[in-house]
Structure formats: C-alpha cells, structure tokens
Image 1 (cartoon, helix red, strand yellow):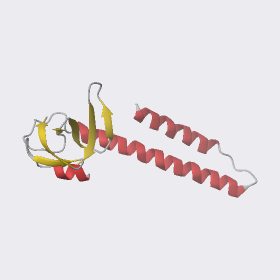
Image 2: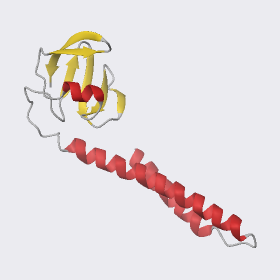
Image 3: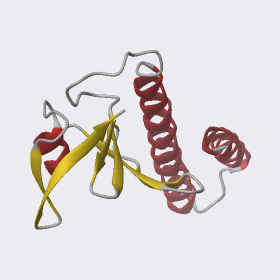
Image 4: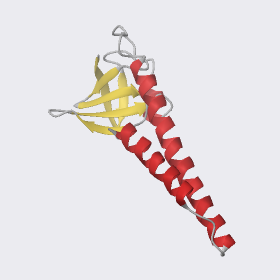
Length: 133
C-alpha cells in the first residue's frame, strides 16, 4: 500500500537526518540536512495528498446513485468508464479499466451535471453518456 511506503520512507529520512553528524565541513553538513528536509517535505506532501484523496473518495461510498453526474459518479461514455472525484489516472479493475478524474479537470467540468443519454464530446468525437452508476 502506498501509505505504508510513504510512512516508511518518512521514518527512513528522519533517521538519516538524525544520523547525519556535523563534520568539519560545515557547509556540506548543512547542504545534506537541507536536501533531506526537502525530501521529507516532498514525501510528507505525497502522504497527505493520498490521505486526503482517500477521505474524499470514502465520502462517496454510501451515496445513492444519482440521475445526474456528480462527485462520486461512475460514468460510462461509449466504452470508457470514468469515476468523477479525484484525479488519480487510469486503474485496471481486471475486466475493465476506469479513469479517475477530478471535477475540476477539463473533461470533469464537461461531465458534471449531465444526465444519461446527454451528448458529450469525448476524444474529439461526439458521444453520449450511456450510464451513470
């Protein structure tokens, strides 16, 4: 799981930062510590984004199916599946792939509020919303 990876990486970086001892080359020491601090900030940001996205998606788990596209909707456009919520890219579900996109993405903005059978441009071609799950 990615969360476990980020937490382990943070622990490793913190340990590395603590183990870094001041040498006679003070500038080298400070540069090394700053690089580690920047890496910690980057990994922590990734972890917080992951946690935030998970919480965001969990809000939709118990929602009723809506007749209009909203956050948490699974939408079939042509033979493609989309989940409107957070932008995480394409996921392979085994038999099918689903593309996770945010409401603020260009295609998310187009889909939001539409209903089944509404026309939509997808990949430059006219299409329609076949299903909202």
